[in-house]
Structure formats: C-alpha cells, structure tokens
Image (cartoon, rainbow, N blue to C red; front, side):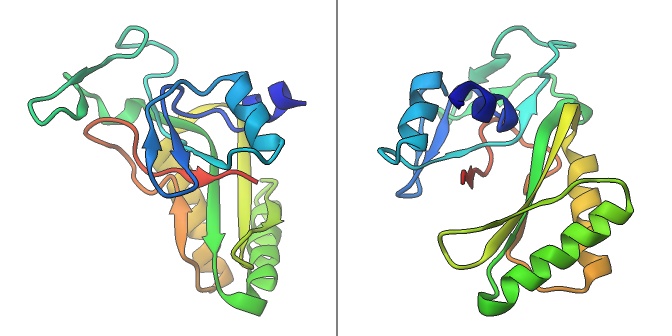
Length: 174
C-alpha cells in the first residue's frame, strides 16, 4: 500500500515537510511513507520537481548557492513540473460543499478531483496526473476551477509556477 501511496503523491524526492512546519532534508523513502501511514510521523510533500524527466539536468540538478540555499543553474521555467495539485479550503462548515463544487466543475472538464476532509476541519481537492505536467498548467487549471465555483479558498498547490531552487511549499498528506 505504501508504494501505491508514494507513487500517487510523487514530488520532490530529497526533502519533505514536517508536521511542525519545517523542512527535513531527507530523501522521501518507502520507510518515510510507512511512518506517515502508520501515524508515527505526519509529513507533507513538495509537489514541484525541476526537470523530472532529466531533459536538462542530471540526478538532482541543483547546487548550493552563496546563501546556502539550493539553486538551479541555467534554469528553464517550463521544466518545473508536478504529478499532482490540490486546492486547500479552510472555510469551516462550508468547506466540504466548496470542495464538492470544485470537484464537480473539474469533472465537467473531464478531470477527476478527489475531496478529502482535512485535519483542520477544512478540505482538500486533489488532482493527480499520470505524466509530469508543467506546474503552471496545474495551477491555472485549479485556479480556473476555483474561480468558476466562486468559492473562498486558502491556497492552490503548487503555490508557484517556478522556483529559484527547491523545495517550494509542501502540502500535508492525508
């Protein structure tokens, strides 16, 4: 089960978000996913990966910049990709209705949106793809669905179209 879950929530492989709001610069392994699924360690995954198909860079592709943060040299914005996106809705009792509205609009566009009740009593609407898509395309599709539903929402993930370097913003996993 953890392998299926891991493949579904594929993201930046070299770090994950911690439940306390930090970043653990540790590879996202099956063991990390197992700990999450067992409830021993709640984690979040960074959806954006630079050049996941190795069109331009090698294995990791990033270097440490002068401020000690990871950066990419000669970055091409269209190589920021993701395999999932989500809408985070934190509007109390109305959240689930808003999430279902977004999911219905996505379904009308032949996109499956999965609604999950979050720990904060809001909800998340998840969209998964089989292949890597540009982060900007995922963001535009989810933002369009939110606008068409005319709802309040907290955030769309990925939160950016591109980054200077990894890891970006993570989303807590169900």
